[in-house]
Image (cartoon, rainbow, N blue to C red; front, side, top):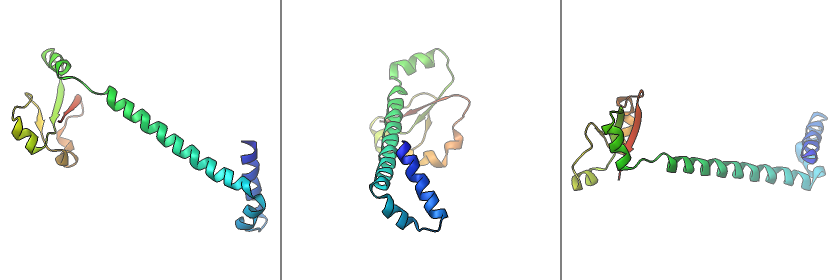
Length: 125
C-alpha cells in the first residue's frame, strides 16, 4: 500500500511539474502496472463478492407453498403476483385466490398496481 501511494503521488507531482503522464509512467515502470492490475483485480473481486451475496439473498428469500398457505390461513395481508407465462397458465389454469395475474413483461409497466404497504410474493414456474 505505501508503494501504491508513493507511485500515485509521484504521478501527481510529475503532472504538476509539466511532465507528461506518459513520461512519468515510463519512469515509474512496473509500479504503474501493479497499481493498474491491482486496482482491476480488487474491482473484479468486489463485484464477485457482491454477486455472491445477492445470489445468497435470493435463495433465502424463497417461500414454500405450504408456508404460503399457512400465512394466508393465518390472515396475513400478503400480495401475490402470479407471473406465469400464458402457456404455463393454460397448462394449469388455477390461480391462488386473490393473486394479481400479469406476465413478467407487464411487471415493469404495471408495477404501480402492486401495493407497497404489504409483503409481495412473486409466483412463477
